[in-house]
Image (cartoon, rainbow, N blue to C red; front, side, top):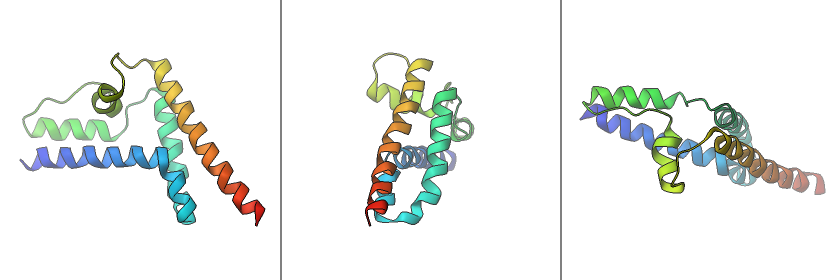
Length: 121
């Protein structure tokens, strides 16, 4: 039971990290020091998506699931949990690259707005 709960908590942490990568720039608007955490997170998220890598949390979750007597899964967190919610078809490398580019574009817009606000003062 411990391993299953730990794996489930890790999934929630993984999901929170993804949300932070996508929308953390908005948090920076309120608390500017968060930029020190957000920029490395965005960099990691974009590289993982564009390179088609598996996040380091995925094998950890799979090993916890196996210790709990469950089956692990192939692929990454996005393919296993998020894609079935968003996309009906299997995720392709081109789609992952597009998601990585969208991630960078969203954050460039937010940080552009932040820079505009700072320069305006």
